[in-house]
Image 1 (spheres, one colour):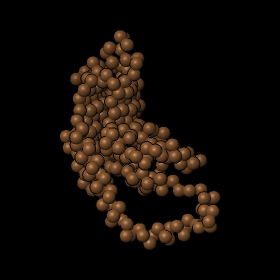
Image 2 (cartoon, one colour):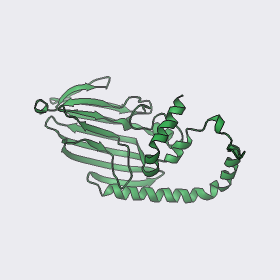
Image 3 (cartoon, one colour):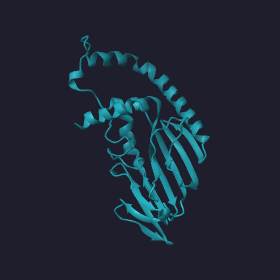
Image 4 (cartoon, helix red, strand yellow):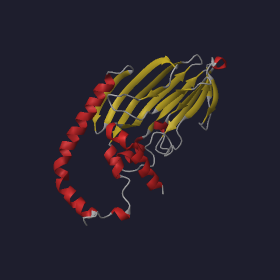
Length: 250
């Protein structure tokens, strides 16, 4: 049942998979500072991995009743044919992939906030990102149209009732989270899950309406600090709702 639902999810995501790129964090430190006056600073320093959508699709497999096609050709026949050309095409595929990811790095480097973005091979990027601004609209990271990035790690959603909802789906392996990676299985998605290793910190002087870190917030110099540890075993995406100073006027 879970496998069928995961396959359905990929069918729904199909157009995005064909045109976009899935990214996943590796080792990282990330901090989101949100002040009650809506000013904010966000930083991410560490590894980012690009995931191969084709490999994610392969991880789901097919039902047994799809084993043979109508012509009588079996999966085994197709695999034998594919293996003959596999070694020959691997080098070409790797070169094409590396070229695509170098182009992605170049596109990201043009964006405000990226102090460093370097593609180092094997689908890995080294990122140093920091940006400040005002939360008068929803903020998300990462997102870049030219690079084809379609799923963010962190979202600060500005709501009409004077609150800001922070969620970090990229920093967990929750199959229900909007990161879309959990539960899909296979290849790069499994590797991404095993590489997750970092700390996401929320620093605020706004009122915390709710949050899901078990230890809760600690107080430092009149500010509330919440830290979530992200590991391959993290099942719930970091989440908090903050009430802004001007909420009464909303």
